[in-house]
Length: 400
Image (cartoon, rainbow, N blue to C red):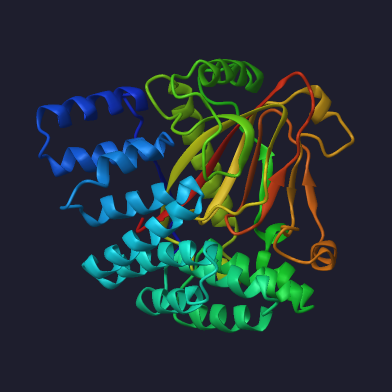
């Protein structure tokens, strides 16, 4: 990667999602023929998990853009029933035919394969191979082809196609994660651990006290109040790793100005950490971008809430800042409320997961944790009548 690494911060939102949806509906009602406003409303409805409304809005249209076709496909897939999966197949095939370039066609084929897998259609594998031929950088196609082979214990096939993609200069979290799991299943555990690279590439530290505050405790109290009173606070969201949790998907807004303060402080720490890695030779660093943008969200767990095993698909580096941690977690001795890194036991064998091992992180208020986006991680329910509040973030690669 280049000698310079700079981070930008996503722009703070001025409107809440509810306000945006209302404005988009009003604008479309005033101009029913506006494809721009229809597409905008469809995107906002999808973010709100209003999949039936997305379908009702887009299904009757005969002039769908590619983005609208993809929103319709994903809405059908989110319903998770056989009839909807067949509809997704139909629309994905149509989107692939209407695609304007290879990248769009590959994106449509990746969604087609998802529906084909659900319906037990064997051609899903060939669909995914075709998608990667068209766009080797397709994260969804890579993830789904790896899953196809892993479920059939075809670990060498994962190593073969991931090696080919790496040779072609492809590098993203889904590719590294798939290769780590396949290496572990093939008994090449030292290589799997080295490629994951958590111990070498990760970083944990207390965040410096942001300007204008006497202590980190005072900053965290004020930040927690803004998060808990945020107009975007919602319970659950489809398609995330969060289970039984409250979350704010876009906390960076005029309603929570301290999120901006936090992100600036995180950006400075992340830039320093990346600079400290310059002497390390690792594939993740070799494909590292010259810069990135910090994108964040907040997760609030109460007693039974937790995060399932996942990687951060769109990030290069990811992390978490702990705003409020119950004493029963920070001073506890069990896994409750902790962060764990390892291999997902629903995707690899128990033996591979055990041999790879887990690294537990006991959160402390004010702690910043940085790690490669391809490292699998999860959390555990803390079963306490208190809130665990964190701000999670990804560094989305940019051209600097």
